Amino acid sequence: MGAELLTDPEVSDLCDKIASAAGVDLRRLLTTAEDEELRLTQNAQPALCFVGLGLTLLLRRRGIEPAAAAGHSVGEYTALATSGAVGAPQVIKAVVERGKAMAEAVPAGTSSMAAVLGLSSQAVEVALAGMNDAWPANYNTPTQTVIAGTTAGLEAATKRLQAAGAKRVVPLNVSAAFHTPLMAPAAERLRAALDRIEWRAPHIPVMANLTGRAHQGGDRIPQVMEMQLRSPVRWAAGVLMLVELGCDTFIEVGPKRALTGMMRELAPTATAAAVDTPEAVTQLSL
Image (cartoon, rainbow, N blue to C red; front, side):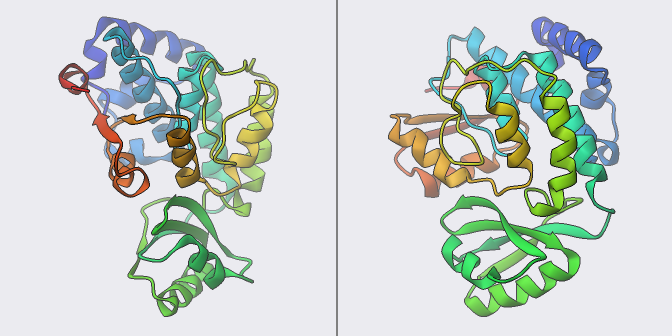
């Protein structure tokens, strides 16, 4: 997904430096890896993170500097690196460890996630109240909440949500119940890796998935990111906080444009654009 990015000499050089320091063959993942291999959590996460870093480098070369940053789930690591809170090689190291920990946290096929459409987040919470095997995992927009849990838990939750009036409950093609208590073992393992990294205070506000508010200082980042892995992503709250800070133009960096689509509901008066290739960066008009 990053082959075009690597045709840029500066991005290509960054890729090699990161790969050497982090011990991951980024170039192969971005250019020749089969889809099945790239979908593996431990491979997809460093690849996604690097694509975000590479596209941000190209945006900055154009003179486009972020006033604030946010990232959804693993994207928060890219946002932190963009803010100067951590170096690129170190953040990829952390993301590699995160992906491995998540992949090994629960047996394959025993848990998953599903998107609940057309039901308020409050109604989703009410429908899932009392369940100990299914939870809200991503508060994406006022009418889109992702839930996660065990296979049996998701089946029971789907019936409850349909009875509560959900328009659709769409299973997601993921390998486990991310951002739930089932990720506690992965979060503990991740914390050990995060504690070995030097974190600095971000130079710009970076919204934390955990709280929907800006990170406060570098010393708390390991704890916040550990908790992020086993807690819901409060994406809607984070975007609304960015709007309150005065942000009116949002650029999504990455291979898809899922977050840009959400902006129509989260901030309908804002300008939102997505860039996924060097050409898209060149053609970007703000």
